[in-house]
Image 1 (cartoon, rainbow, N blue to C red):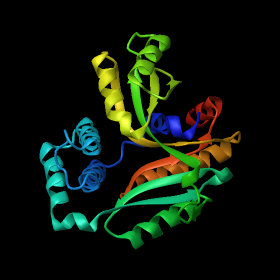
Image 2: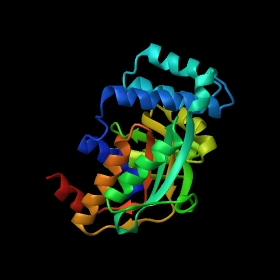
Image 3: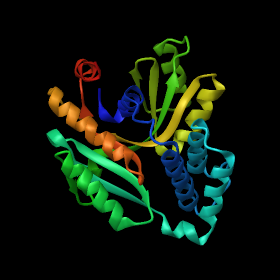
Length: 251
């Protein structure tokens, strides 16, 4: 089970995503604000796809409409200038490469927190460029089979213009070029394919096989601790943990 493709699946299984409601809404609000800033101040989700993705994710988490609107309005004001998007790079147990996306109003505080999490877990926070080159920016769409076969979905995905796909249990993970994520997703929806999630993602160019249950547990613990940090938006890694080991850890 490779880190780029199924960390979100592991999070659901382990309940990592069930963080405090208030903290989750804060993260989503920051993602919305950053999306407006990154889109040149465009606050219309129809004209700003990154904002549309952030709003959809917030709605799926039942974030109140007024909270979403407040985050959009914040992006238009002076307060938005305090929040910046920063990537942190490091290595976990077993030499696993990790890329962390964060949104913070205090760069120094967040850097210290991320550094502490890495070191406590037996990893190291590295400098810019240490691991980024090991990942490729992609669009990622998770679709449900809903009675369709993998071959049927594959035909639709190829026709929609996707680059690659991967089977993950009852889901199919569809990879696209970042700039084509919206177009491919719309084509899948038109074909009545159930889209569970769509997001911009980082896919590792190669993976590190983890055959030790102890090392796997340390890596997953590090990933969880990073996810729990209030400034962290997303965490990507290039570990490859066999399903048999994952099942052993969850039993």
